[in-house]
Image (cartoon, rainbow, N blue to C red; front, side, top):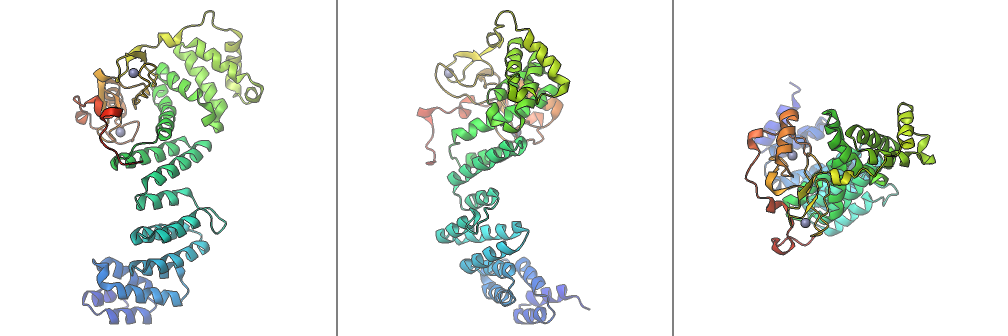
Length: 394
Ligand SMILES: [Zn+2]
Ligand SMILES: [Zn+2]
């Protein structure tokens, strides 16, 4: 009935492997045969020879991709990688090929093969590949330290190109992996994630007409404006506007003055240029002490009071974890963590945002308000040097 799929499957299930191979070969259905073999055989060890025959068949047809694929299933990793790397140089869609090469190298647990693949990914053939493959290889081989470094590089590239959400998500994903494997988070990763998250929080608060919370986050971003090179002028402009709306006149004046530099001035959106020039022309009379206006809340390490969006305690010198809703430092008497991603936050702020948005601003997962804990111990989220349980060497 020309139903080769059923016929081949039936032969394989009946243990007539030789006949299945012949039938597929005669009718040019070797790819189909291979797929059925992969999907029907639970224990691939049992039929290594069948995969090898398939690999040799595709090898003779100079089909590097399929030869590599079936050498991989036959557990002949060195041959698999050799064919896959050849295939990666020829095909246009390298995703499938490189993913298979990564799986093959990870299964082989062979450092020599890993180095060969790393060379290739770094551009051994003159063409460096997307760093996400390197990241995936390190993760598959449980080399978390190298994976973290690669994630930071990938995120930096995304950030420089202005893709702040994807930079954020790369760091967030890496952060969760490291935590899952009980490995210390590099401080560079924490700092970058906090900064990117602050940027993302701006829109959340401004959308809700909460200009003060938005302005505070914009100030944090504007103070690190060199990390947002694709959007310097638009970010500084938003900072001026939001600070003005929030009544932070001194900050608004400062960032407006920054925008008057010749390299920025010409790029200001015409819609705002008059307004910004007006702000610069009228400096605030006294130094409105806005920093002192910001409420002081206690450091969860040493109880020293510091401005709520300050995350470095000047007394105990600790960096305090930030709240994923406000970007402020977390506080002991109003504390919880997202039930989905376990990132810490100020409980009242988290409940308020979950009520209206339904999703967590860090992990974007839906949060059931009944799952939000009121009894979490903040100490589990702090980094007490002397009481820290032994961590794996990072
Ligand atoms: Zn402190
Ligand atoms: Zn979350």
